[in-house]
Image 1 (cartoon, protein in one colour):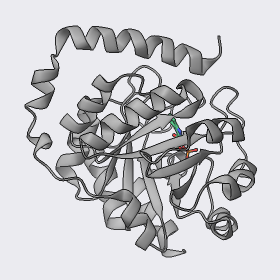
Image 2 (image 1 turned 60 degrees about the vertical axis):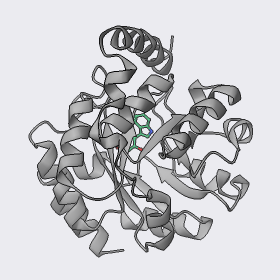
Image 3 (image 1 turned 90 degrees about the horizontal axis):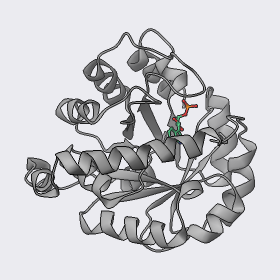
Length: 259
Ligand SMILES: O=P(O)(O)OC[C@@H](O)[C@@H](O)c1c[nH]c2ccccc12
């Protein structure tokens, strides 16, 4: 079993357990069901920098990135730096995140928040909404076209935006549908952890213009962004490069200043 299969296997069991503890009606009673979302796709279209900064303590490929910050410090720092949006990892077992992180982030900033999660069930989309997210991630590598369709349509019904993540042409071709807002190319192969910006470059021309193009992972320099912009990318998802420093917000500020 590769790591991605393991994560999904665990996630499916986690969702079954959580459903048995917290009923949907409880999620739906969250104040955030009344809240209107802030559109990340619109912010990215209008922005010159396009940075989506990520809160990430650790990952399967890096056992410790940073554990010394509070969520508030990091996300406030990102917002002050001028990030267009923030991605908050909520997976506990592999990334050390939680839905509480998302809630704390929501209480701290007024820019779009992405629930960064391995979504396999509508229940997790309700959780995202209930904890203040503006958009969700769907990963084409672990979902069928039918699943992408039903999950993305469910998210849209709740008023959330959808970022669909692909890593190759096959995943992209099976996924294109009107219920998506943004398409992200992950430069990291989630099965092998190999990273190359060439994935973004190669797939760019195949992404229809109506979707905002986002390049994800392994971005560690402003040069990388200047290389990707001519391919039509408007969004750049950066985690480790900021989180590995001793002041993520300051690192983001310095980075965005140079763009
Ligand atoms: O830390 P990086 O290399 O800047 O990458 C951020 C983000 O793209 C990465 O965390 C990510 C992209 N797709 C994912 C799916 C699940 C978990 C994590 C991810």
